[in-house]
Amino acid sequence: MYLRDYLYLGFNEDEENRQVFDAVNIQIPGSHRLFANVAFADPNTYSRHDDRRHFLSTSYPPMQFAVVTDPLSGIRDGILKRPETDPLVFQTDTENEFYAMKASLNVHDGLGRPVFVPDNVRLYLLSNYQHAGGNPDLAVPGSSDLCANPTNPNYNGPTFRALLTALDAWADRGVAPPPSRYPRLEDGTLVSLDEYRAGFPRIPGAAIVEGLSEVSLLDFGPGFGSTGGFLTRLPPGVGPAYPVLVPSADADGLNPSGIRPVEVRAPLGTNVGWNVRAAGRRAPNLCGLTGSFLPFAETRAEREARGDPRLSLQERYGDHRGYVDAVRRAADELVRERFLLPGDAERYVQSAEASDVLR
Image 1 (cartoon, rainbow, N blue to C red):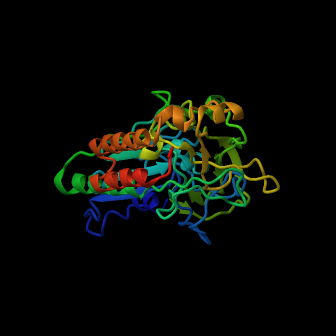
Image 2 (cartoon, one colour):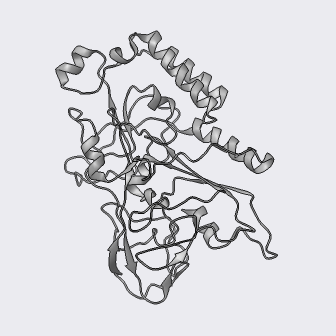
Image 3 (tube, rainbow, N blue to C red):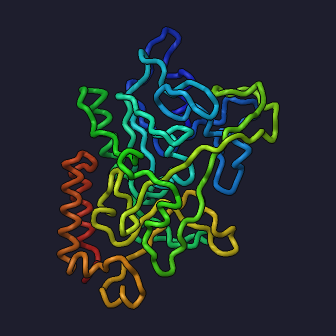
């Protein structure tokens, strides 16, 4: 959120019209900008699925990097509109930002039509991660009193390290980074929540997402606009709603789009970026920024007894060595694609070898 508004408000240009930073790495903002350039602002908050939806407008046009016309407001604007000083940009979002922070609005407009991404921008989905991407010291799923499902333990640090290396090479030596890996309407990897739910596997005992954070065009009065201002109409007037879409899911509930990490290419279960609030905790609302981990059965017999449509670990890998080999193949693929550094690839393999998977 912070760096998107930094760029939009022109802070990458100094008093002598020189570029400040040659590259900017924006992490997990969705389509949000700050709600900071307003009197009495609270810049560290944002509208949520079941909290402050029609009170804050951290998603307010422009939401895209390219200069386009927003069809709901008529505003023609873009985050990047200063070609002489606009930097190279990486923006990374997890699956969670599509549910909690309307990330799909980076690539479509208020009528659900595709929007292009400028050549100096790369958008990357970190497939099936939760917001902030887990903890490197936690190798097992966690839990939360607020959430119905076990929480997503996967750590996105290795992917970020590879991306930072690629961004540095782009800025320093002109080495073009990998193309954007982001769900798009054009290839069917960006879908409505109803379509997502229809395609998601029916996993016994799992709470399945039923809602997401939405956004409408809000009217805070004549003193407020895209750059901020004064809020003279509170609560704001509520205008038309923007469509909000999510990454599609495959038969395992995993994203076919984005940067698919080792945990998705050689999975132990269904990792997703969303979770659902537990009974008595405002269920079935979205459980904030937390993801879910829904493990596979170990054997076919166990899977069939549960009624789980997903293949078991044994059916996928055969034995422990088969799992290690799958992790090695996934890690090698990611290194070739420049989404994993060799040292991190070796650590993935070592972790798989030391694990008790199918022992």
